[in-house]
Length: 341
Image 1 (cartoon, one colour):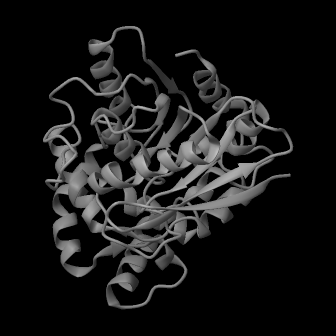
Image 2 (tube, rainbow, N blue to C red; image 1 turned 135 degrees about the horizontal axis):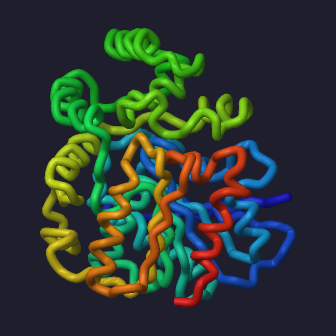
Image 3 (cartoon, rainbow, N blue to C red; image 1 turned 180 degrees about the vertical axis):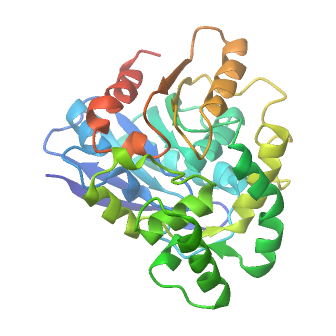
């Protein structure tokens, strides 16, 4: 039995976002941990219909659990965000809010996908000195995508950006307009991995796999149905930025925002956090070598301090929402959170 407490916070560029503190039956004794979702989803993505979600596991372990809804969350009106904006404005403000609300001096974070990339930008820029441990899933500073997905970024994103400002997997349920219906028809025609059009459109939106974001064998029917409500609008501004990052092999800023460095990898990262890099070996969104490359980068700077876990038989998001994740992946994530800095 859990109870949610919603805590709004404001960013310096005028966005109103929120945090969700999840309270369980047990009083926390291990301090706050912040969970950061990916693109085009929301904080609820960490709570699929399974016997024990990752949030449940953290509560049972004694953590004070906070979920961040940053500007990419589908709980807010669609906006044309970039990783730079989230890094400079969202995550530092969220952390300050958690520390103010809890009275803690430090916290730990579990970050996923574009929540991970933007959070890592914040960390290497020195904006998150209060964060002592980071568990990063799927991708961080060095995005690598499968070859077909790279060609899609290179050749499809520019013309698609002329037709729409957003892609939306919800078009699988309710497509309005010429382009959304054309895309829905095309995806239904070319993706045959399941009969869930939101699932298929999510795969098309974020890559070229069938599927892209999970291995179907790791989902049960309830989870597969639940994802219909958990994916919505993602702006083309994100895909334009990711296209440039993939081409060069590491994250790049796309705007000159005061407070962010001109490069995220040319100088030593301004963070003392210990980082555990997590990758599903079967990830069809970002290959596991994405995390290997960032681990290598950090390990050269501070050898034998950070860790890397490549998990067999798992993909991208099923690390968190898989039907057997409580058995297969949660113990790895929680053991990293429990390690002394």
